[in-house]
Length: 302
Image 1 (tube, rainbow, N blue to C red):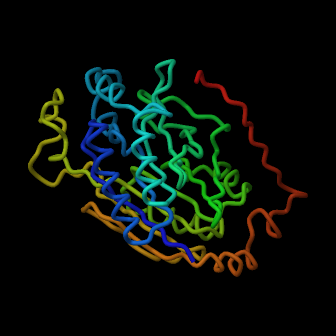
Image 2: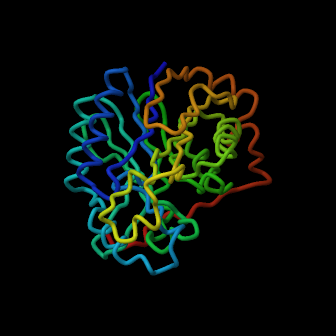
């Protein structure tokens, strides 16, 4: 049995340090609830660049400059602060960040911190979706990361990567037990996606999302009043955080329209029974018919 926490955060939008402070408070809260694995949303630090869906391409210079300025260096001050919080909690912490590398490119990255506070791995989103491609570069196969936590093998895909059948297969092939699915997708269908992955992969799934209303967007950003009116029912993200069992059953959530945290105790023995019926990389895999090859060379400039 292990206890996990899925945190539905509201960032201090495009303010890296203030957002990290909020995450540290959530880590402390999750640790107090006994969580051994604490999972945050996609790009929560310094906040998901939602404006790419609301502005013409390349017209967002001031917003992009703010995102680039507030992005995360790995390793760097953010990993030190969050690592210290993970160490104090004695827990694994997984956080979505906008990562900045020396060349200047930004990546949509999932950061893994171990209970000593060290960086245990990163995953960079392979294929940013639509307007996201104007702010984030493409990841590569070198960061299809799975970490052995000691209690389970944990890995994840970001947002619509979870709709990529071969990306999912690459994770199953690495023997994951707990699949993480941080996202910006608020659609009614997203919970069905989480349930399908759990049942297909015979894994536990932790789906996390941001909770962000237009009133949370700072008025100091140029054009904020036009893009994000403070009044009304304009949610950038309503949430939809949930925890799902390996049979597709919803164990906790979905949590919507408020920041918060779902805590659940996972019975890892349930994986054995689920995989007896269907094991996507074992007795149900048909390797005589199907084979997956993953190219893993690293292509970016570090």
